[in-house]
Length: 162
Image (cartoon, rainbow, N blue to C red; front, side, top):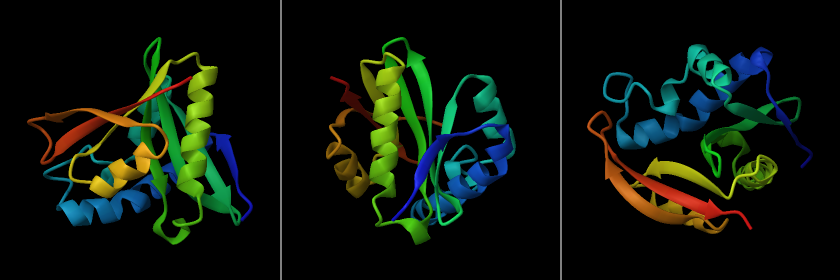
């Protein structure tokens, strides 16, 4: 299937919000996440979040196919040697076509170009299948933390860049 991944601008904000919210809706339903108990979960993404991220230097990318956004991801420099992969999203109707894999590959490529030594991610600790999926790209779980403002544990994973 033909697709392209490109950097986003502010003009892409609405498409990013729709893609992120749509991709994370099933996760929110599975874990009982609502705007009340987890207001910062990606299923509640707003244009304001995207714009604030871009103002802070977060780089968003969109994967387009069939003339529309099918997926997206964001990269944020945490430290000079570490980049965080955030909000990796593929809309349910486009899953199973390798788009998530393509987005991770692009994220690792971009992180290398930024001079990072590793890429970090945070995922819901109860998402065993997702953690296994990331392991296939070289990510390893480094710690699990409990945050008082979140109704789930967060597993942090890192992938060294060689």
